[in-house]
Each structure stands twice: as structure tokens, then as C-alpha cells.
Image (cartoon, rainbow, N blue to C red; front, side, top):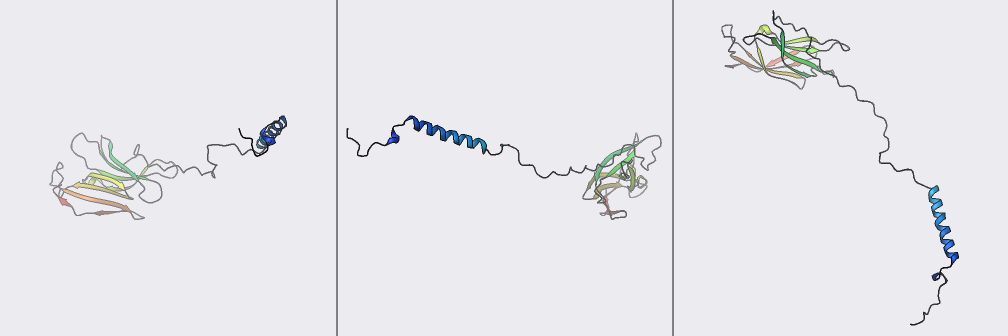
Length: 192
């Protein structure tokens, strides 16, 4: 073995004083890190500004208990179709109901009525009649969308046409103009 050309270094042979110096340095680092700790870690995001609770959604009026302007004699008025939508742009939905007398035979004519709520939680009431049952119409393809009421009306060209067999078919639309519901129709088609 060849002797090293470099003299032996003192630090390659540890002595007890080296161990004491190392232990003191490690203890100092541990003590300093316990004083200078970062904030506690959490998985939650920082709290954002509190949001206002969402406004309660307006509900459309129900048809239950409404006195429809329909004379049915000994039978009751029957709601056969209904749909809701904000027809006048006030942010509160209205309900449009197709109603006829619950007759035991035949096809009674329909009435189409617009319901709204009064101030507060007042009982729903009829505010407009779009189709009067006296007009002898039957309502099909009934929808409420884009602030309009769309329906197909089946009717009769004369009083001589039997009630079983309507011979006219009319696509009809009603929209609120700020004062009343305006009706627009396509040309009536024969042989419904």
C-alpha cells in the first residue's frame, strides 16, 4: 500500500467534540424550525365573500280550488291540461289551464284560462279567457313557451256539423301586449 501524499485531515477521525458540535447544530435547527412554522395546512379553499342566499323561485298558481267561469250543471269542471310560464314578463309565472265540464258522454268544448296569484299568497284567480267554451272548440297541441300560449283548436264550420266530428283545425297563438292577450291564427284548415 502506498502512503497518501496528503497529510491526514483532522476531520476524518471524529472526536467527541465533533459529535457535540454536530448535535448542537441539529438541535439549533430543530428549535428554530419549531418557532418559525408555517400556518397549518387545510384542504379547504380560502373563504370567499359571503354570497346572498338565492331568491326563492316563484311558483306558478295551482288550479286547485279555482272558480272557472264555466257552467257545468250537475257535473264538475275538469282541468285537462295545464302549463306555466311568465307571460307578462314580471318574473312571476302564470298558469294556463284547459278546462271543460266532466261530461259522462261526448266531447264537451274546452275553455282556456290564464291564472295568476294576487298580492302575497292570495288564492289564484282567472285573469283572462283565451277560449270560451261557448265557441265550441276543442284544444289540442297545447304549450306555453317564450311568453306565448300555442294551441291547435278543433272546431266547426257551421251548427249543422255534428259535435262528434269537428271539421276545422286552427293553429293559434296568444301573446300579452301589456294590456291584453293578442290572438294570432294561421288560416283555418278544413277536414280536421
